[in-house]
Length: 152
Image 1 (cartoon, rainbow, N blue to C red):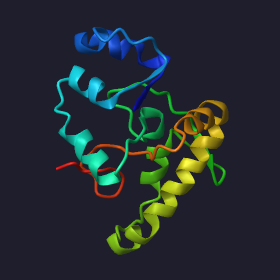
Image 2 (cartoon, one colour):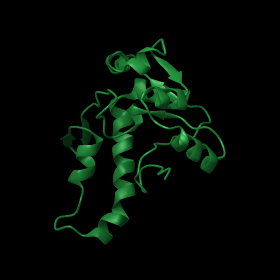
Image 3 (spheres, one colour):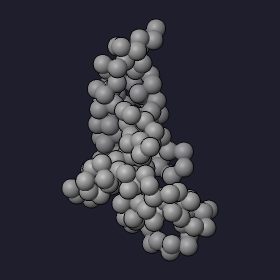
Image 4 (tube, one colour):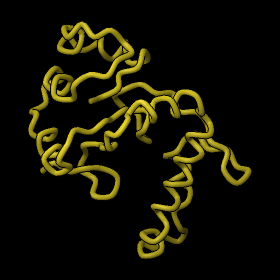
């Protein structure tokens, strides 16, 4: 299932396939239905469900990049510094000069810090949304071996 908050109204309205679904936002919607309305093949969803052995939940609010769906991520204060969001914090933590081995050891801890700060910055909305996922694992379909599930 995919969470479509009220903030997604402009995205839904701008895409005839989504608008035709007549979704009453906010709502949880079947991922295959939303994907089909956007012209995507359901193969990625099917592969993810087969891999997990059950259905999953997704919401743009749990992502760190919001280029299609809408979410105004709050600024994060971490270690006394303010970052525009989790993505800005994440990239600011990369070692200079670049050291791939060092970054590979640190990046998960860095993202955990970012996620905890994001939850703290939006305690009501994100906490309630996270609890609403119930027993569904969280999963993001994208070609990213670290932060997503690559269905290909």
